[in-house]
Image (cartoon, one colour):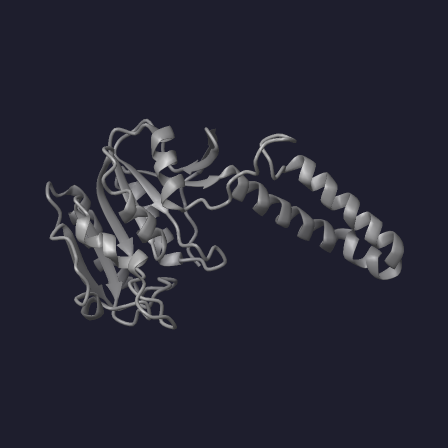
Length: 258
C-alpha cells in the first residue's frame, strides 16, 4: 500500500487538528475531505495527493478535535490491552474489571470528550458540511481546492459557494446508495453548484457510474469523467493512476476547468 513520502506537519487550528504536506500559508491549498468510512483506506488517492505535493500544491487533512481524541483513546486502549490488560483480565476477572475502568478513566482525562468538565462534547463529525465550513473559516487560505472522496464529496459540494473555494474534485461521488432508494440530500444541491467541479467516477462504482449520474440534474459547472475503477480507489493500475493524475492537474491548473 502506498504511503505519503513527504514529511507531515501537525498543528491545532481552532477546534480542528491539521496534518499538512507544506506550509499552509503557501497557495494554492488542497483541502482533503475524506470518506465517512474511516476504516477503508484509499491508497491510490494517497498516491495522487503525494504527487500533487510534488507538483507544488499545499495538501492538508483535518479532523475535529473530538474525532481525534476518540481515535487516540481507542488506539491507546488497544495498545494497553495488547500489552497487558487483556491477559490481566483473563487471569484476574474481578480486578480486571476495575483495572479496565481505571484505564478508560485515565484515557478520558487525557483525551477528553468535552471541551471542559461542564461544557458540550467535542464534535466528532469531521466531514459534515457545517464543520467543513467552520474549518475553512479557521484556515483563512486565499485559494482552496477541495479534494474529496465518496461522502466527503457531499459535504464539499454543499459548501462550494464559500468565497475561498476555487475548484472541487471528487473521486467516486455517492449518487445513490446501492441498497437504498434515491435520497435528495445526496444530489438535489448538485444543480446549484457554482464552482468548477470535476467528478471522477469509476466504471464499476456501486454508488453510480457516469451513465447513472445522467439521471440527476447537474450544474453546468460539473464535469464527469469515467475511469476504470470501483468506489474504493484502493489499488488503481499505474496507467489509470497516471491518467487520473494528468486529468486532475489539467483541471486544477486551467482557468475554467477541463
